[in-house]
Amino acid sequence: MTTPWPPRRTARRPLALRVAAPRAPVGPARIGRRVVRRRAKGMDVGAAAAALEDARFDARQDSRHEDLADDVRSRAELAEWERIDQLLAAAVPGTVYDPDTDDVVQAELAAEAAAAAVRQAELHEASRVAARADELQALRELGTLEQTEPHDGDEAVRDELTRRAGGYVQADVDGWLAHALAAHLGHYRAPAAREEATDLLPPPVLAHAALLAELARLVPGVDMGQLAFAARLAITESEAAGALAVFLVRARPEDR
Image (cartoon, rainbow, N blue to C red; front, side):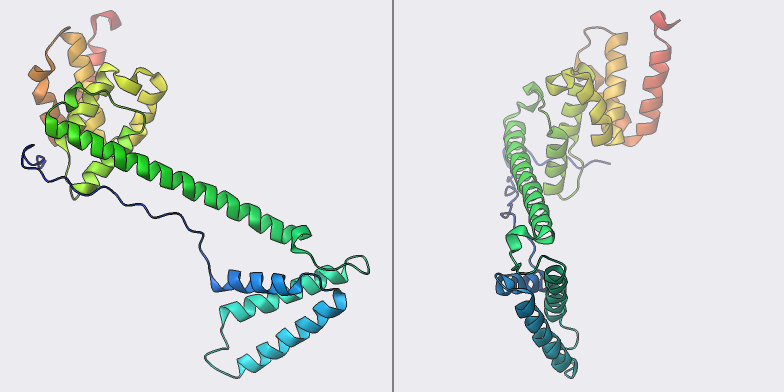
């Protein structure tokens, strides 16, 4: 059973999704490694070995205190000093440590940059979805949603509108998408978009679209308002609606 959206003139529009600026996660281990690398810059093998001994001494001292024995940052710092010591010991004599030429450091920086790019893309997409949801919500309040063609990504906007409504099915939005999918409107003109929609839209919407498409072929020029029963069938019995659409496909005269 669906819960209709509140009347257009009295509906109170919920606030748009607020998206925080993307931040790279910072943990104590990561902080510890960075501190060690800053201190180690310019050290030769002897200086690094001395710093390692100091770190080991501190670790032994910490192990005597229960609240410090399992300190994540201290363990990370010790491990980083050990790594840098081994790196310089294997290098050409006279080599000093430089994080700019440390393959491990550069790989971490590249991974962080890639992760930041992903977070930025997610932020951009979340902002786009929120803005489009506001737009569609305004159109439905004006009663002009049915005259609007869907855009690429509106499947995610449907999910956002459903989230704003507390998880209730938005029958008007689902019907709008089903009609657009059946009639190949908007971005659904592209076969690839219609194919992708099968993974993005829920079964009732897909069943509704399939049934609408076959009914429109059966009665060319039919007024979509006369096919309201298709939406009710798709919502209450989506499997039956899908099966009926398949049956109508098989019953086409050109397929006999």
